[in-house]
Image 1 (cartoon, rainbow, N blue to C red):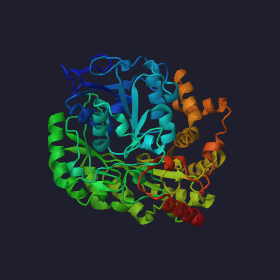
Image 2 (image 1 turned 45 degrees about the vertical axis):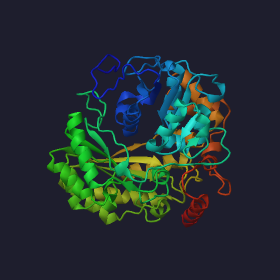
Image 3 (image 1 turned 90 degrees about the vertical axis):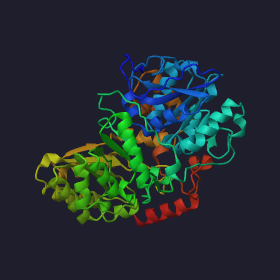
Image 4 (image 1 turned 120 degrees about the vertical axis):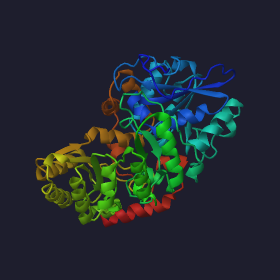
Length: 518
């Protein structure tokens, strides 16, 4: 039995009884349960930590995304968060910072590290923490820089034996006292790395992904698009062997009593045996879901395989269809391939969704028009118009990428380009990321003490994610200080704190080349 708010039955719960002299760890997911259950990282943390004999881990999640949060209680025993001496929180997305601060405040724990007197050790990890180390250390005592399998055992062992000072500022462990960048630790052989077979969920809830066994196929991405944080943060590209994946899936669906698989991979079809993997899953009588796909890796046969998995939507992310802009993004997908893949999807009864990006350095009106006209021409060939969706984001300059120095496109320009796109794609459902949310993402990545204070104010008032924008303004902060183009001759703060294995000089050369070519 697991405790999920109203004592709903939960599959996969671990409650360690009679664990004397054990370290109790609060695993805090900074969002609601439906997001936590779909996080393979969080699932992995839960089962990996509980495998350690002298440790027990209990989960904490938010009940809502804004408003006043009740004092957090563990899903396992109902214990209060304030009882635990060690709190570990994965930060996967920028919005997770606000969720973390909200839950700490609700537990009566001061979220700002410098104001915290005593209390628990707070540890964070994940892409949003590594990419924004300055902001992360305004809240956390330690930032884990690297893979769970290598950082978590060292952390717990150091705490258990009372020698935390032996790991801080070494590879994988960043604190505010470090005087040089901390190197990222990563697992080289995924076949030998831990993967949770049991995965918690509430049966009948439909979570996660239609009640699926989540399987990590690979880490990283070999394409290294100039805007992609995860490709640069999680290099090199690694994957599990076909035999390992099939064993995981066969056991996972049986143990979790599901008939569906959710593949976790930035680029599934870069796995050398991806086609065989899908064919085996189909032969096992399972359905499956795959996220965003690269059109240049698809063909009619692969689209057919995806359709046979039971997937209803094929998501394609060309980002742009401008021959000039795609070079800046280092992601040029041939137009003929987009057409071929879309037609195949429609033929197999699938909806298509396209991800586009606006505000790329050097982008002009004619580039937006070129993208829109090509899409409009393609959509006109669709047998049913309501099978099409278009999603638009502004380019958000991400740390550790060649475009990390870029400016966020000004709001007026973003709105003007959206207007062009929507006018040409009239009749097509186009959704866009609200501009203020894009601003907040950039502010989080380039964040500092002022941003941490704004997060605290927003959390105290029960405000939502986008409200951080107004709390910064109340402090007299110029948002342009965060969204402006950075000087390529200056070392960004994240490079001073974390070494992900990419020379800064190579990123600078790439940015200057892209900027010049744009």
